[in-house]
Length: 448
Ligand code: SF4
Image 1 (cartoon, rainbow, N blue to C red):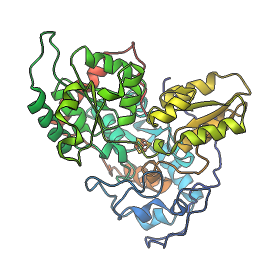
Image 2 (image 1 turned 45 degrees about the vertical axis):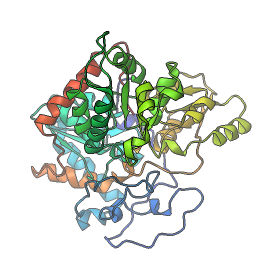
Image 3 (image 1 turned 90 degrees about the horizontal axis):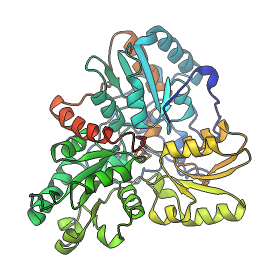
Image 4 (image 1 turned 135 degrees about the horizontal axis):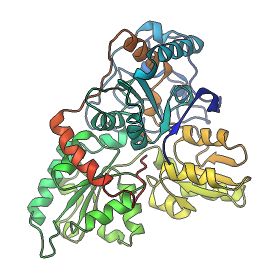
């Protein structure tokens, strides 16, 4: 599905009781209250800038994930934005957007809160949005309301004269951070030493690196440099087929679940999919396992999609006869097995849109998208498999206060929080992105 172009009149906003309310508050960090049972963290009621200076991803699904390296932090947001009411921010954002006109395009990821999505010119997944920006040739600035790797991808795919801005630099992605260039290079060197570098009689290389779109530009460049490719959750199978035509094995990072679910659907046994854990010597993989492997899975995961369980699916089936359970392939294999359908964000959006009125869906993906789908499709019953409201911690870091801040700076001619990728990296990363693009139209290119 192409990204959805939004006009204000086309929006169906939903008021989320549990969504953070815009508060009058300064920078002092309050003591956390115990979490009410309806949300995963009481800190979701607080403003994201209270977490900007702290290590960690902030409240939400990935708040307990370890950070592999110091992720970018957001310098202090001026008090005038922290203290502005929701109404004032709304007026300031709309006024700045009007003033910037066609020079600006705002992209909103599916997982963004509704308070942000309402200002987006396009809503979609990461790859759809990067391409959508290209349909606005007069846009000088792309404000990407998503997370860091998405803004990087947009920066690499946009024109050199376009500026890409991420409203809050602390909006990273815990899954993307689970694979960094040093750790992947170390793994690659160990595999190369064990398996060699030369092609076999059939011309296949020992290992082809495949990175999920949800990864840093440096890892996309690593793939480009080593004959690899990028994949999305929509085209992962086609990409693996491409890789197996060129290599005997695949090193798949950073999401083990997308890799495992995809490879298993292709008939590859679990015994040939060892998990490479970079914190263990030799990745925790024996030489024999590496030699026998078809897919070496990186030990990465998305904490949003790890929240879904087989028990939740059983409970949904007990509660609603005829319920269709659809989940994202970043969910565990057990959850995918217990579901009726599995597919990318795009797949989920399309499946719900195409269903006959009166359908019942239990959905295993990020809460902001599920609740928006429920509001957009009142003819269906749609609910999140996980009854506890727990958004993606890093998507949560984008708030109207940051959006107002970067837009008003743009009006003054200042590009705050500009995301750039060194050209030496971008050149190699584009090789891996282009290798993926050449697989179209065999595969839809949607992403998470
Ligand atoms: S939902 Fe998961 S993969 Fe997507 S940005 Fe959040 S942590 Fe990363």
